[in-house]
Length: 221
Image (cartoon, rainbow, N blue to C red; front, side):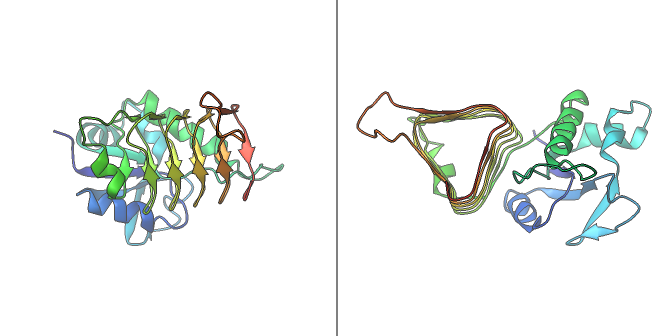
């Protein structure tokens, strides 16, 4: 049985969405691992910073090893499509580094879905949508229950609609109110606010958009 003790790795603004999704799914939030805040900030929204995420790679750290044994994990910071300038924190690199820590430490990584109609649809025997791990789906999002594949560590923000024949690679972050169908989005892409992604020739049943790796689609595209 999956542990109901949850630790977030990293943090971000508006983490209330994550806390609410965790609470609605019955998880007890143990705390946040984030070396940028640990010993500098006590808590965020009442959830304590309990350590440094890099501890998970230290096999001699008994506390970290106990967390790995007793808890499940979720990466809680994600990229917003910005390009890091010299001297600035690269949020994409930071997220990828934390995903690497979770992978190398063999942590148990869960999905966090805000309850909705689409989660009920997935229970149907006719559903064929495939989901990886470490995926966050916010409130009011909708994902087709058939012919969709969502890779590990994707983030799908509120109000997004994903129709059939969509494939999302690893670590694809989709901003709110995006609509997409019949498209492939490869690894490490960011899709900006209120974008519309579907083939121009909607009458051609074989047409499909492909967004290559490491792409940024700006808002309102």
